Length: 308
Length: 229
Image (cartoon, rainbow over all chains, first blue to last red; front, side):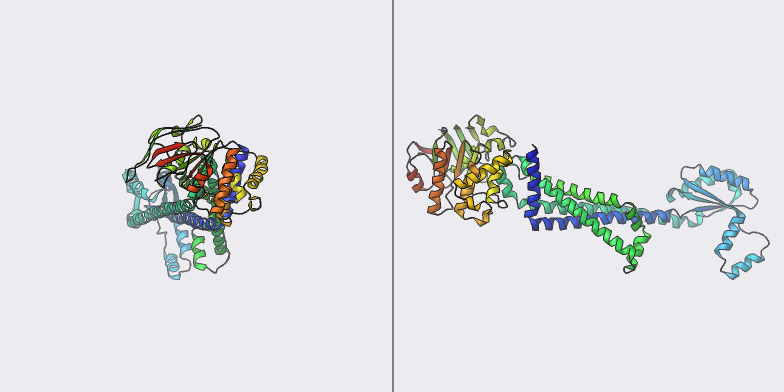
């Protein structure tokens, strides 16, 4: 049994080596396929990062009338924080609102002067609400409006003004993500089919040999084994090469300014960081995906020639 | 050893052609039997039925204790290791050297490395190719390829060697070399079944001849000669 296993390995490596051109061509195709897959997944991560970071910046504010005391605002904050759709509520007092405003416009002399001339603070105290999902803002607003006591306390809810923009943005984000994943899945399937086809052709060119092996009395696993080993070798090499290529251009883009626009895009999408923190995970995935692709294609492709 | 019992083979293609019709014969251990007939008479079909490459439409094909027509695909390798096969087109593995082609037949049977290293050079010597062991098939002449094929067929000391038109692609010199090899193998106790349509070979051999015509056995003689219309 052990000798047979050793022989299967020996023949797998031998056929990889002796079919040099075929092996090279197959690996090139597989590298391309794996690059497509690897890039798309990393790019999708980037797009998701971007969308999430914008999403997290969307918020709504409820402004309270001046006569409402801090105590009732804080109790409203507490109730709101307990809502399942709410990610966080920040209280901004009148004073805080003013200092924020001053800070924001400190370079604008006209506004500065205008503030100086005011006797009292014209800004309202507010609660700043972030939702777990921007789609839920309308629910949150409905909840606020359903509270009778609050209604008399609240002077304005910013959502009513920005609702259209928020809804629109939310829709765009959703479709960007859906389109991204659809394209990814579609291209992954294409990559799998192309690889499968390439390996099928390689094995097709060996069909006579397979027939001869059968006639000499080789059992199916003794014939199939070496092809699976060759498939594993294809997968490992292709996985490694595709990973090195991805690594190389991420490295180039994060250390030089030559490809300025691309580097900036990658940086903004948080891709270099994602790549470096998940270095071994990505390497592992590329190798694993390559090996699975190689073995599965070989196994399926060879099956039909083993029936003599 | 071999027993064909009421065997018919009909190919269900477009033409629905009858390859063999109601064939009956027996071959004993140690015999040298020539199957003769024109192209399409059914010689190759008989050999294919014996190694399980084809299944009969009717009847039973016995080889020793095996009922070949009932073997499953996964059982066929064990049958084929008992039968050495030589084809007109050699059927060597193109990416393996002469040595490796012969060694492969031993490896599929799970023979040890030591046995292989021992026996393959001996067999190569018997067929006169000791100096070509490292050559790939495309570096060998037709006669040399066929001798490698015979070496491969005999290396596992099979009970039976089947040769399907083994000299069909060879010149007269090489033809006689191959026939002499087959006679030698037979004299060492292996049953040989040879399919041919060469009058010279059959008349020279002076052994049992089964004559086929249109898928039927028309003659089966102990000391046969080439008689075909």
